[in-house]
Structures are given as C-alpha cells and as structure tokens.
Length: 304
Image (cartoon, rainbow, N blue to C red; front, side, top):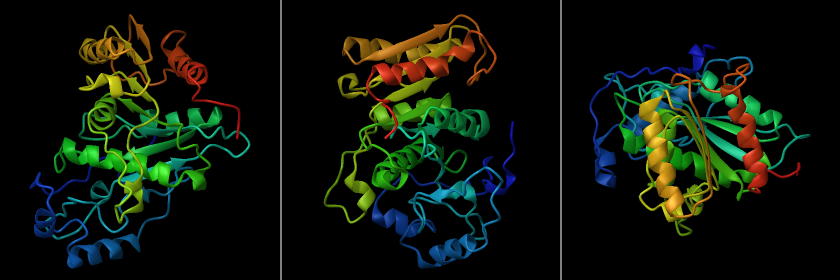
C-alpha cells in the first residue's frame, strides 16, 4: 500500500475528550470550531507551513478552511490533519470528462482510512472512465465519533455540488462509493442523515442538498430507515465476508420492498477488504459492472 506520511492519512490523535453537543454554546466552550479566536489563529498559522505535496497526490482541500465544527486540539492547543476534514480531488481528465463524479469514502474501521486501495486507486480507475473521484478524509476515533464523520461526509457532498462548475460536474450526477466502514458512513450520512438544502443559510455550501444521486456500497452498509427516499444503489460483497454481507442483504431487502432500483453482486469466496482485486477473474469484475450499471441507469453519459 502506498504511504502518504506528509498528509497523515493514518490517525494522529492525541486528545480523548469529546462533546456531542452541537449548540453554538458548546462550540464556544471547545477550542475548535469558528467561535474561538485563539484556536483559529493557531489553525491559520499551521496552514502556512503545510509540507510539500506527495508526488501524484493533490493537496487536500479543507472542507472548513477556518476550522471544522467540533475540532479538538491536542493538549498544546495544536490541530493535526486528523482534525481537518478534507477532499483529495481527482477530477476527470478534460478529454474524457463525462460530468459524473463519486465522493469516495475509504474504510478502516473508523480508526484509520485505507486511503490507497480504497481511495486513490479507486479515483484513478474512475478517471479512466471519465468520472471524477474525490477521496474524503473524514474524522475518526478515538477523538471523533460517528456523528462527526457524518457531518464531514455531508459537507463533502455539498462541496462537490457547490464547486460543480469548477470541476465540470453535473450536479445531478454526483454519487458516493464507500468501502467497509466507509460504506457504513455512507449509510449513516446518505441513507439516514440526508440534510436538505437551506437557501437562507449564510454558508453557500448549505444551499445544496446532501442527498446523492446514486450510491455504491462495497462490502458494508446500513439499512435505510426510509428506503423509499434512498437513491439507486449498487452493491458488491462476498458470502465469505458474512458480517458485512448481512448488512448489505438487510439494506437490499429494504430497498427492494420500496422499489428502489438496486443492482447486487455477491460472490461466494473472498475475504473482507478485497477492493478492486485487479487480475482476479471473478472479484475483479465488479468495478466494470458498476460502470455498466451507471450507464444503463443514465448516470454516465458521453463526455461533456
């Protein structure tokens, strides 16, 4: 697996306190977020000393450039990359761009992120098909719990729609793909945690809904509480990966009952975490099957 030490894809988490309250008063009591001038000054100073980028890996685009809500500094008041949710943007090449895009959510048991073969490699595969790939660096344990990860995922989808013109995306063809814990986060954010557009918000990103146009669950997922409102869904898993298979089967059953278009590919053998399995004559099929599903579902068109 590729190593990206300069961007700290693996967790650098030092403080263990956490508050689940989301009122403005709660944010004011924390050193993170946009209400504390001292913390923001530290944050801005750190950004001036960002190391040179890793070759071939774009610089991270911070989802909250002035400090993420609920960010927790270490004992010295410093923020690491683990407190700064971001996107690594791999837009489709101009000569192939179809206008379709995926928000890519790597797995890692919510304690790290498999940013290579469930992130960068996925983005590059999508680029080869004219699809933009945007890898999410979401906040993870032990400092951050699931509701904060959901906040990051929703913000990322809004960012893509708000910057659709910049990336030459069609706002109605922006989907998500998650792996393992990333697929669970997908379910929490995009089945069960969708936030509607708020045209009155002072934050321009809030003007966009967080409901994706399509979802791909790769060996993981959640059961939608309101399946009728769920987007069309693609699933891949193996029967050998029984625990994660059960999560997808439950989601599939709910979607089928609600007549939500769903394509499912379950293979007999394969351990958890197979990713694209290049060279495997069976497990390596699913990425192209997903591309075909996008085409037949109307989400992937000729280049713009």
